[in-house]
Image (cartoon, rainbow, N blue to C red; front, top):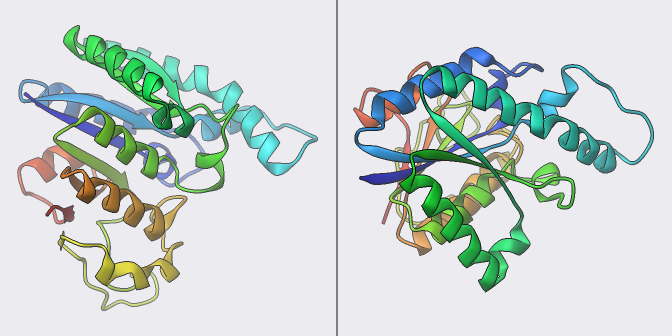
Length: 251
């Protein structure tokens, strides 16, 4: 069986609103259930801050400190929501909090790999998020794009799917240029570095820049990566069967 890391950004999980969408998480659970005979899944999920913001406002502290505190409040709630919804589809989940320093440490790398492999062998779906209470990389930039690519390289998965709020990478900002064309295949990020100036074109927190960083990591580790429109229902099933257009990163 192939292993897929499915990265879910905040925009996908909220459907572009300011509230977590249980309907979208149900859509994801249905797709995992439909595809689990062929694939094992690891989820890298953002959304803890958005989850907390649904029901609380915090005062005091710097903007980053407030986001860290919101993450601490929202993370267990988000994990419970995943557990409740996936359990309705007889899918078991496990929460895994990591940060970039864990990936740099050989001992931590081995510990992460061992734990996730045991979870997969026992039919649990690991749901990974950055531990924002002690690390601020996701908060400041990237929305877990880089983390998902690092996890893909560490675990040697077959495919990384980044669910975004747009169909993929375009040759110019589609919000500004109605004639922008989607880039369906990327084998080298160098020809597309100039697109970083359009980093805030709607592709999640980090925009194009974070997607290109993730693509570079995947290319260097010979891991295929897709950027798909997570707003669509059954987006993963459609991508697997070729029923939707998306960006494929592959050597």
